[in-house]
Image (cartoon, rainbow, N blue to C red; front, side, top):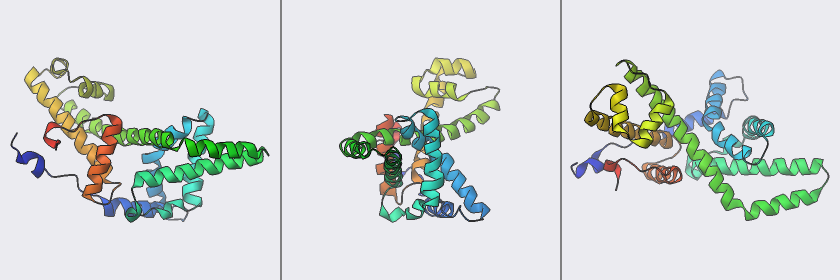
Length: 248
């Protein structure tokens, strides 16, 4: 591939104005504005998986579901924490983690106060102080998976419709198998195409996934430099490599 391909290929557009405007609109969901409530619902759907994953790792399923709901409805909305989000003050991923961390600390303190045993509260504070790095790693893993899941959902919706027009039915599990195994003979047999065309299909799938992953990350950063840093971090966590023509 010519040397200029990697440098001239257009990057995902930074969706700052749209995304951050929607987040600020979501912060007004406590009002009667239908558009604000819709924006907040979208926000919850996008990031619930990351938040629930972290909470569930330390709590029973029912309690984790309740805490996840409380985080979004009470901590972010009622306590106006979403109002504090500002693209100029740092990464969205870091803001979400800090907000979740403070929520979980407050919940632990509230529960220990109800039990009238402040030793538990002190023990929790000490544990949190010594285990913060592992907590960040756990959170970032769930966050990266949530970002990837949205990209994969969009990828499957597009390719399922595209292949259906050619008489092939592809579910998400099959699509992921193609992406991971890169078995051109399996794809060729399924789609009734040559192995060479199957290899090209694999390349297009990976390029499309990368484009959609890049677009997802672009919605949470403020400039192109931050996009590349954040995308590299998400891919490091997911152990993904960019397409060959995107390597630098």
